[in-house]
Image 1 (cartoon, rainbow, N blue to C red):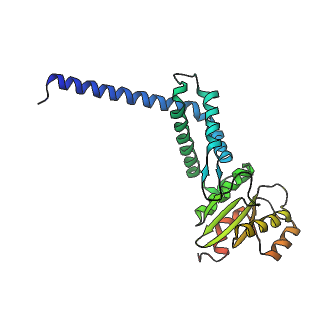
Image 2 (image 1 turned 180 degrees about the horizontal axis):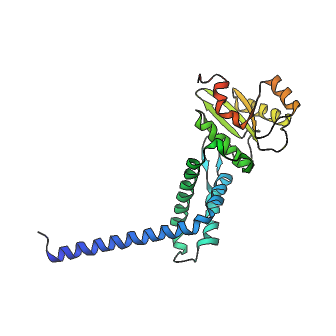
Image 3 (image 1 turned 120 degrees about the horizontal axis):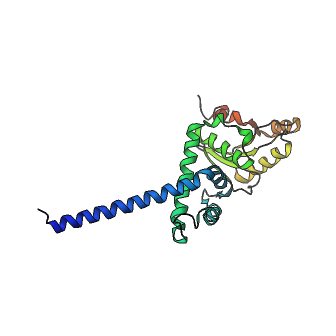
Length: 232
């Protein structure tokens, strides 16, 4: 049977753990309160500043720099946040943005998103996400572009390259020429230009002659079926 001294010690340790947990909960609760109005902007920053190289590696250094800037301008000095809290706050923000992104995807099915409200980089990610939900393994190339390629996707042993054009006007044949060069560079099987708009007659003529697929973004879910990769 535990002595009174041992029981008192256990109570002290329990109280200490409880206070530490309360402090931790308050810490994260305050971060969430401060970050919540900016979650949409922070998600856009993640989209624009995250770079994927040719080997599938992800470079988030630009995004981390942005989060440090956010910490300096929006959090440092408020409540009890100090410089020593920087890394913990940045990690918490990353988690909050990730959870926000997942919640948005659950609330709004991809095909019901207002594509016209997306900027070009968001449109690329949108197209890559649609491909990923329909059997493709897809990745967006680095923000500066890569031989005219915005997305590289594979379906089993078939490799496809995509150029995504978020336009208000019809897409011209220069996009067809660029994705053809990208196809050769990546030694891909399929070349695709996808848009939220339409294509010029010249683009259609060149695409027909060179076996480049011209798609409206709403055709992406059925693309694997169209090229015979799935039966249903």
